[in-house]
Image (cartoon, rainbow, N blue to C red):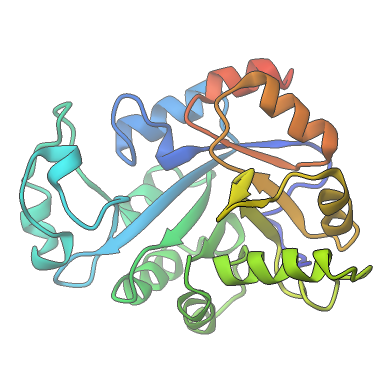
Length: 251
């Protein structure tokens, strides 16, 4: 487990996937929509521009969200700011997002190694250490990011740690506290590579360590309630309003 102000222990949290998909993911309007809908946390992704700015974007290129055949890493931030997205909105930097929403928590997935430095700089300059979670699919990238901060930030397990946790569970380990030391959450789908990650016994064992379980991407209210009843502490969703209603939360 990891003791950090980012983690809420007395209620289930709703994480807006990619900053709440409509009207456009990871944009200023999307985040405003998510907050208005009652999201507790903005889940987002960062890639680096050519000049080292951490940009909120899931894909490495701009084709899907803007119809532009270009990679984020090949354009400077000034150039990226001129690109109009499919709904007429624009890209947002991590630093600008943290500044625009100074009390909001952000769950940040560092998508490429080049984005580490820009991510750290944005968090440091906004003094946002207590309200961010930084992680990555790559455990090395996650660890390398964490080493650069002047103050601790929250973190969740990379894919390899999730899989090794499940393997230890299947091998019959009764205490995973040491294995999950320093890991605040497993942010996981219901299944991964054919591995079932929502069994009651697995959830109970992880919960016994103090490490939280956040499930993504859950857009079915029945599934939301089922996972929470089993012991999930967080639901990552594209539909914040639906999750708020399904879980009986007050926005």
